[in-house]
Amino acid sequence: MKKNSLFRLFRYIGNHKIYMGISLICALISNILMAFIPFIVGKGIDKIVGKGAVDFDNLLKIIIILAVVYLISSLFMWIFTVIANIIAFKTVKDIRNEAFDKISTLPLKYFDKNAHGDIMSRLTNDIEAISDGLLQGITQFYPGIVTIISSLVLMFALSVKITLVILLMTPLCFIIASFITSRSNKMFKEQQKTVGELNGYIEEIIGNQKVVKVFGYEKRSEEKFKEINRRLYKCGQQAQFYSSLTNPSTTFVNNIIYVLVGVVGGLLSVLSGLSVGTISSFLTYSTQFSQPINNITSVATQLQAALASCERVFSIIDETPEPTDLENTKKITNCEGNITFDNVSFSYVKEIPLINGFNAEIRKGNTIAIVGPTGAGKTTMVNLLMRFYDINKGKILIDGIDIYEIKRNNLRSLFGMVLQDTWLFEGTIRENIAYGKQEATESEIENAAKAAHIHSFIKRLPEGYDTVITEAGANLSEGQKQLLTIARVMLIDPPMLILDEATSSVDTRTEIKIQ
Image 1 (cartoon, rainbow, N blue to C red):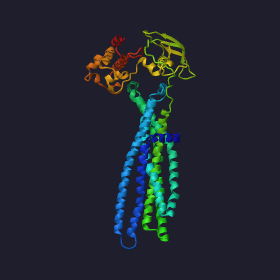
Image 2: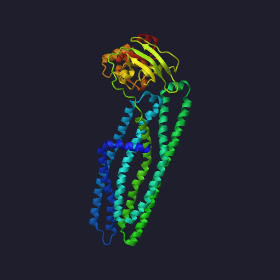
Image 3: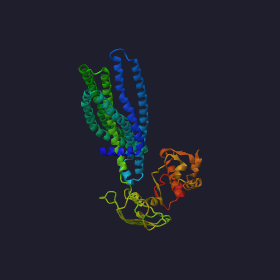
Image 4: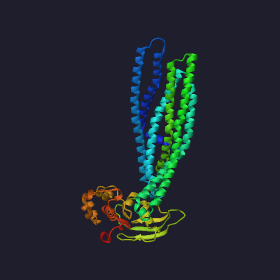
């Protein structure tokens, strides 16, 4: 699964080929120029410690060349860093857009089965982890690989023997890094999963503070939060413990390489006349060669966290969306509002039937009340009628047409639905009422509010219809929120209306007026 996530991530990055090409060219130029610096410095040292007087003219030329090389290399590295950020942000934007687009196509049962806080965590925290890992990966891998290859070529040009000493020790770094990342990957997966669980619990408790306080659940909610937080701390500590071993371990190996280069270089200087400048170049190259390996192994653990997050985000993208409409589906333009349930059977779980052979005939203009004990299937009937769930057997007809022969969006537009649990978004009262009809005129919005008997209250507000509703309508009473949702339905004026205790928080006099 990890490899699959990595390949999928590369496909998203591949959508930005132009930026990729420019960044690769900049990385090549910058790091190849930097690879020549130890070589040039070595030549400069030879001009100082060589036989005879110091060659100041050539030394000055070398200093000027070094300054120019540093300047050009830094410029291209800056361009590379800017473009790397663009690639990372664009890639993450594409993933986030695709994940959110998928959310809007998923059936209702997905949201019934998954904690909302965990879904939100995947679209926020996990996406952020992907962004961080991707940015680190691009900025370290590209330049690192170029630096390793270019340094290797120049080292071979200077001395094959010393280069072989460095190469013989290098695999040890990768073995250590591979061992550590394999251990940390599992911990990072568990960490992201627990973050989602924690977010879900926080959303649950904050959104139901009245219930928590009424039942005196504060202490127990704190204990459960601490238990989840403790697990998050534990897996986070384990993941960071393994990842923190990477840099010191590889640095230790690189220091050994540095010492070996000095010893072998000294021996070759005595035995074969290797110049001091060349030894100096090799000491610098050993550091320049090993530094990218250190950086790559260090970000490998961060990439593990990013890949763990990729799996969680891709699991949303891979979810099966609502079935598409059948061919030749119809669009009802003049709906009368006749509904027929014909021998309908349904169950949420295959082995446990809920509705069996249900029949009902609802005629235009009739008001029908569905009553029964909790769990009898009242809300389920609405879910089936709106095609939030698919029936197992039988038919549901609107004006004699099977609902599966009607376009799903068209079917749902035929109904207005007001639930006991109101939903208002952060925005003005005008925007909330016009949610289902964005092109509504001021007059239409006010008429809908008057029909819901909320107009006079709105006009008494300092900003009137421009009053901003805070998150979830926290600055309104439950009754006022229900009246606004009723006004929202009044505005679209659908042929059929579903009320699920829609006036439970409205006073009796206003309820009678609305009816």
